[in-house]
Amino acid sequence: MNDPILPPGAAPADPPAGKIMLVGIGPGSVEHMTARARSAIAEADVVVGYVTYIKLVADLLDGKEVVRKGMTEELDRAVSALDAARAGKKVALISSGDAGVYGMAGPTYEVLFQAGWTPEGDVALEIVPGASALNSCAALVGAPLTHDFCAISLSDLLTPWPVIARRLDAVAMADFVVALYNPKSGRRTRQIVEAQRLFLRHRRADTPVAIVKSAYRRRQSIVFTTLDQMAEQDIGMLSTVLIGNSSTFVRDGLMVTPRGYANKYDMDEGGATRDGEKAGRSLSTGLNGWLASLQAEHAAGASAEQLAARHRLPVDYIRATLDEPLESEA
Image 1 (cartoon, rainbow, N blue to C red):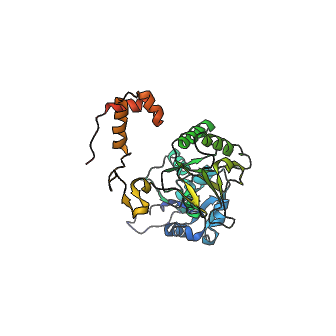
Image 2 (cartoon, rainbow, N blue to C red):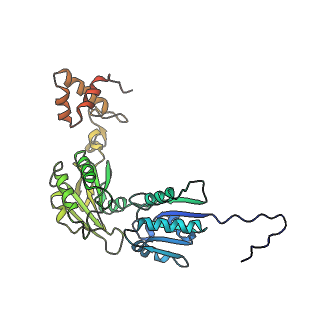
Image 3 (cartoon, rainbow, N blue to C red):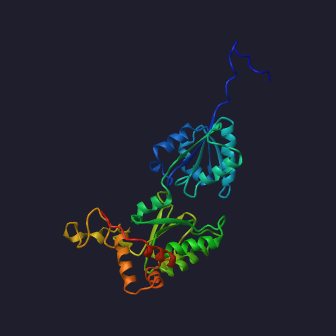
């Protein structure tokens, strides 16, 4: 093919710049997608994704080139997106939930960096956030994430089990509310049992648990249970398991984790502060108060080892803390 004839003095046009948009579509229903997620798919020439996620946005795909990939083909999805973007196309690479939470953002960056990509290169990148499964499931069951929480995936396809087990044991002891992703599959059935065993080392058997399957999708189901009954429930890859902390309760079909207002305010007295507490200041049992009590206990004869065991903290941390002078809170 002959090169096009350009007008005198005209420079050849630069090749069209490609773009990858990592789109979090939320739980899957269109009404729970962000406006930017919908517009990113609308402006895309190519849409790449896991077959199930493609079905969730089928109504938005008219006129698009669609690349469907299987469950374990994450790297193939990223490579396909990069190839299309280097050809000058706008690509929407979709993930359920948020692309950065067990989604396609991580593997895509790995593929891009391996290919020599830089942010200043010819392929632009945008991450479009979406509601992750823990947000969606929490909204359906009440307010379980009002206090400190974390997410752990039970999938050992890419992560060694001892690493997962250490994380489970640590957060169970630390009293986090925990969202378990990928809790069980047709071949992975024991992981949820092991997670339960580790949690029961630190948590009461009646700790509230909510199991949400297919949140905001056609076959949505919600089950409230307890930690000692958790592994006996119907759990699969479309389930997210929410395990409460020592304060979480279930009332009238709602799972709630208190933020801690009752520690400072008398809820029966119109929210007046309790004796010894001040609005806008740390609790009397906050850091400064605890440091003062620690120093007092140590002065009364408690050893660093005894204090560490009492507070379930490392001995070297207790020793270092005892060596620091107290600071007054203004």
